[in-house]
Length: 278
Length: 278
Image 1 (tube, chains in turn green, yellow):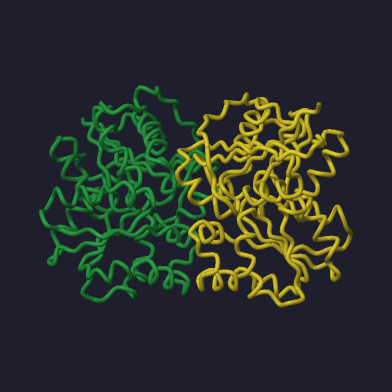
Image 2 (cartoon, rainbow over the protein chains, first blue to last red):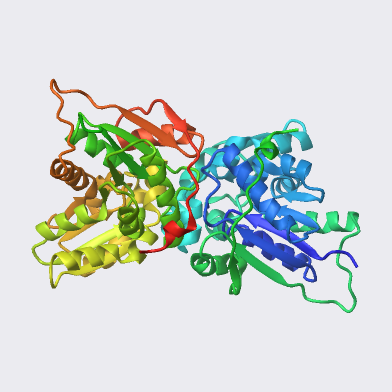
């Protein structure tokens, strides 16, 4: 019998949108979710610091015998994916590549907008991935620091969110994008507001669904897909690094259901050697 | 000759408004500033986690032979002041009491509003301090999670900030406050916007100036005020826990001048015993 558990981590609640998509596409898999709430957010921190935090999170998940690690955080995916893949002997899936692939697939004009945190945008990860996938595509990016607090405040559909969206998207729209990648796991909550600001012909790419599809393909490829019969309903365990109160309160909107039994943990220290690129 | 250095810490750039006030009131004192940028913000984290971070910051400052610790962060002041005072054998000054004292002094109606982070508001620290200072005062609080990103984004005077201020302050104004305490070191940057939303008769209390005055009184009381003649200009060293790039860029608006020579450091671990209240 193959190991069942998929490990998913994020800086906080945002990755729960990815977890939700994985549960929808792979309902029989067991899942372990880690939110590094004692150090959230990652989006304003340096690549080096985010890399260290990501390595600690991956170490924690590996101690839970996971068969795959999903980096459900765009900032961590943008800086840590390569080194995580190098250090851990299981598949590591980020949220950047699945979103980039979908954007390239659906864009007709080859003018793609990407919105995300400062960290994600500054990393240039989307530009790299998209230009690797298709020649001649132009990528326009915008950091949207207010979107995370707006989503967590429950103000995703407030006039303030609409104004902020207008402000952030205007430079991208002036560049005539036909596709917009939501490059942060918080942003799916702002979909309705973004839709109001975007012209009808601009497509939105939500990486959560694309990531779930990639996870399924990879598990199939590695013959580690859970295929028990009769069909089972997978379990889901939640861990956080700070007291869970706020995670439980804010996270339910991200998961789409009530969060229960969230445990606080301390992440393992990592050796400085792990920080070095091979 | 008395030791010269005053240690100041905050989760990030916000405390630079307090540092600026201290420099204005005590220009000949040497200062050491620490911003815990690898774990910023503190305002959404649990009291226990913030206490741990504050103890580490204080340990770091004490290794720099400071004669006083200024907790230039309302969230840390609201949860850690008592235990810091217990553990460190030098005066520890927070930003809550100076602001509370000033609010009580200037309020005529005894109806005081306090705005701050979730952590500060949930701690009840302002309510406790204000009610200790004057009987019968009523305190009305509001958490304003968007104000920190708005200030850091450079949008303090944007229409979005005005809308958010209106939203956050309305419940306080309905309670007929005559005084509003800016209970977060980021909020002085939003003063003009808040002024537009507040009726003219409502006073604003900015804790930074009050804290600087308290620091001066305490140093005088302990006979540790720098009184060299001829008058000197104190030095200022800056330390952060993440790569300094963002701190330097965003922090300059908070300090009111360009930030130079910021060094990255690792904070010392603390013993779990220190977390226990005596």
